Length: 149
Image (cartoon, rainbow, N blue to C red; front, side, top):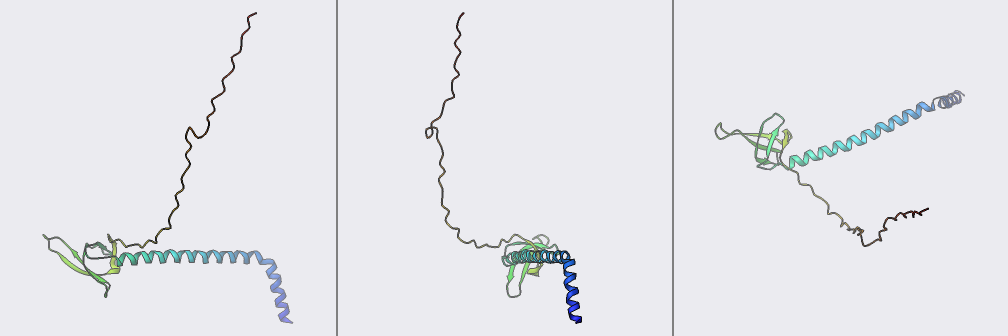
């Protein structure tokens, strides 16, 4: 008997508060969509970063997160590291080994594989010339004849 009373009170509560539940459901849907879109953009950024780091080759200019600038001399894919040459001939060159994750900026460009584009059909535009369509001359105004009285 108590169970029936509980169900009856829930049904009455639902009738009174259906707008609140609808608002909460809409809010949850917005949050789910936001999370989905942000995860997609995060994955895209991570992929671009990974492509940039994998494109680093000897001869590329690199700036690390610590602000050290130099030229890559050697890349070790097993350790995921590279050796950076800094300094000048006059002051003496230094060689520092960094993890690839320490790269802040580089001039290395990741090669993007582009799918072959579908052939585009060229449509010829019909250009009207002055001879294609007859051109109407403006109507001449009739001159009023003056009669002498």
